[in-house]
Picture 1: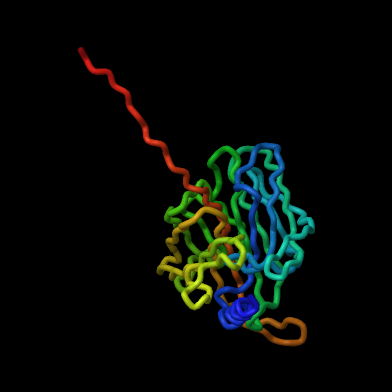
Picture 2 (picture 1 turned 45 degrees about the horizontal axis):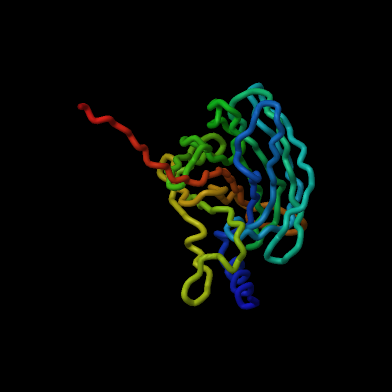
Length: 272
């Protein structure tokens, strides 16, 4: 176990692709009802490894409604980190939709210093669906944002998802998208090679952007998935030092389990 943990943290130290990121999920699915509360958990860590860390209160969180936008007050809560067997600081976001339609939930973090000696600001989005397909492609207005062209809910394993990355409203033609699933399994159950090393490429997929900023990805399993894009934006002073500055945008979607369909039996009567 000790050697396994040592390998895990050495891997994260040298591989920036598995940087920490905000994690958004519900206990079930992102569907709601009119005038009923829906609670989202906002945490921080490495979703592919179910490793949670303490999170700072976000700079702002708001819900895009059918009549504008509404600020949301994050409430502090605890989330259990299985790696260190201890509670971590997270937040709950409670929304109450008043009309049918789709509600983008938008979150912007403060600047954060992260592994690799980089300062990063995160933009996070997911969509709450309430009874009627209306407005799921609306933007939060982030500096860098993923615009979905495939409806970001009602998804099943194997679906092809189409999106586009925008920077200040314009498509980005270079860079790569990463895709991870929030895995809540114990680390002993992570996929491994014959050497007992974690088979990390299985845990995270990468795809290059097309010239028009678009991309296509798929989700093989059910559960919560995050699509991420990061762009370097020069240098920023943090504390008394200068650091590379990056903007990361994340779109969280939920994939429903695929249930086996029963065969349809058609009964016929033989004519006499």
